[in-house]
Length: 470
Ligand code: ARG
Image (cartoon, rainbow, N blue to C red; front, side, top):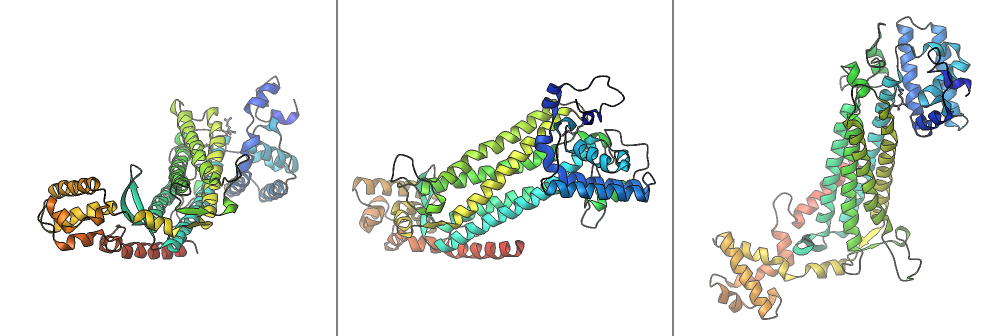
């Protein structure tokens, strides 16, 4: 075993680590991704140690220079990661001590337990900002497609049965709303992620007089007034991963929303619906059937949502039986986090690109929506307007639908006499209910699929997203 492997064993151990142990315990193969946060966190810790008199100015400078040069090497792909040094923290510390002897003082009052919690929190802050940005980019594409499609209607569905007509844009805006709540969940999560755990040590802080405020402020762990935000219990700070669970939970829900959108896109692009056309660049062919054009991107997005959900379940299971405080099990959080986060980024980006390259087929949408049975509920509303109790109106219109079926006529081709044969309170204007334009005109309340309301919503979202994305 090489000398480097001794860092955390020196003094106490008489034997070097077995190779199997190294292979089984190393995390450098995945936690190297935390290098930037690890270096920035170490710099802040070093500056604090200088402030409280543990490091001389010259030692601090040596450490900062050393960390900077390590950062440059990693950035340029020239740094050699060593599995025998276990993780990103030991790799960087050991390289630092080799080039700057004062590096041996850097770990004063710090444990990898609070260090890894710090790195993860810093990494997640950047991730959350990126995810929110990507969610908004997708929302913008949905709004843009909504505008391109406006005012074309489609049938709205319940139970995947045609229900009532809605503008295509209204259906898309439903996803814009879901995604908005997703972005809010990420932003709420940010608030709880953005708390500095450094100073908690292994689990019981330190006997040295650390200046935790200084570190937190330097690393941006501050509230809106610039006051430092510190974890308040050293044991909680090193054992808690609920901020990772929260992130993954928001990610899983976002992935589920993307999966539902994907399902709609898949249905809409089938010959049975034929409401949309996804451009060739965003569809795939079949190796056997030359005519096929498959919505693989939407299918994969639907499939990958399972991975994100799986990562959430893994994280929860990981934490479930852990005693306080830090346990090595926690190292298993990283691959789940990285995979969940990478998967979500990929899904958000590809969905936005696919939507940008999708057009509706207006004639097909319009003709599917032009089905008078979709307006049966509007006929019941007509009766309600002439004071018929809704339950009775529902029953009467049910009988009208049955009559149309019996006569093998579309609902709007029944005569006034037909309607009157079911209920004498129908007047001539009853037939005017069967106008799709009127149906969309009449829906005026907030949140309804009336054309005016949908147009307002499209405008609102467009300007909101433009402002937020500047
Ligand atoms: N690689 C470790 C992890 O991710 C860092 C913390 C190690 N702490 C320890 N006491 N062995 O959890």
